[in-house]
Length: 76
Image (cartoon, rainbow, N blue to C red; front, side, top):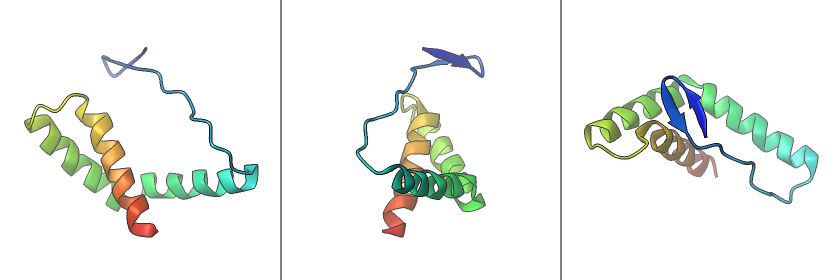
């Protein structure tokens, strides 16, 4: 468990993905650009507010995951 922002969060390990290192780097760079974009941040905040008002467990993490999934799905 990790503690930050006054909350306790479960530690997340890196899933085993069998991609060549250069391909993995491309995905990591792509995801980083998505996560830093104003559009992603806006969607994440909107989802987090909705999830908090709906009392969904771990709303910040769920909102982040859902927003990232939406952006990755859109790009495919």
